[in-house]
Image 1 (tube, rainbow, N blue to C red):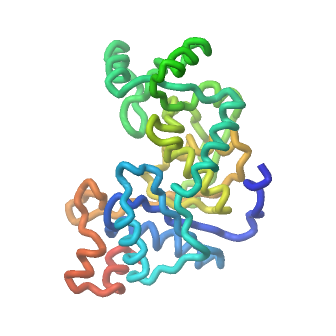
Image 2: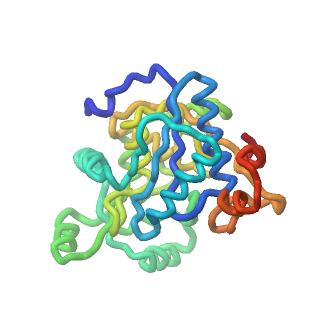
Length: 287
């Protein structure tokens, strides 16, 4: 617990945290400069983190490319780069603490199982990423869980959102643009905190990383605003410092679609090959 409180929040610390699953595009550049500018304006520090827990999609060559693109754009960061894959022990420790609080449970469902359960229910509430998990495995007894684990059934670990809400009570967080936001701890349902194939998840890893790195202002796109409700709950359960947030608008192209890997947005590398200068690309990214 002392490690989480190692740094007093006396200076502004921001971070840019890309996943090495592809090349950076203008939307990434916008987000990186947004975070770096807040740190510069406040006289603080700007950090770089590589979020590479998903070893099925992350590639070392993409990490190398990310560093090259950021250096070409003229971005500098303080201290060494933190790579999530080097810190799995930190996430296991956090999971153990959540287990001890009784707010996680094993889920043996496949995606097909979840869809069948949703279909039987007729309709299900929707979260940020679609229909919420219906809680199929939540009622299993400890003995039923032990039998299935002993039999070798693969399981993820989910947050029991209802139990977590009861333990947390009223929560809120502050956003630089939106002001104080009241947390709805169950709005995203029982999210996965550790996948079947990976011993953590985005939600858990990012909360632990921000605390250990002393991040005081979490900057990211407004598409992740809903996830912050989950993260605030985890911060409370793990007794972590509460950062400030700044959810920025998303950069969009001429077609009105936001820049994203799945939309095959033009990469920084492609723009460089077309002869654009770093200054011109920074201007395209609104920096």
